Length: 144
Image (cartoon, rainbow, N blue to C red):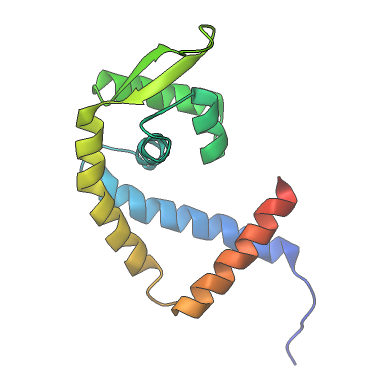
């Protein structure tokens, strides 16, 4: 007889393992372009923010440390994919701006990213994907 008892440890372990597997698959796609998953996600955050955002906003959106974002931004800046500028309203803050080169790179990578996600989730019908997303959203809200 199957147990219906809660298994938070197994759920947490499964989410961590799954996150690692998904990240590894996506990293393989980006690796061919010399872009890490965090760098790609940073560019996506900037694009969704109209092309510019503060480093702390990127950190919050990606749920990574500010030190991680600083390292990623250093790398992206060296590749001329972003530039840092003074914040227009608060000169104590920085704004990170995407360059046209970054937009072109993102335009090239986005279709490959979408195809990789389609392959990853191909085993789950749409209804199951929606249910999974709803459950993950509930859990994320509880943790915020």
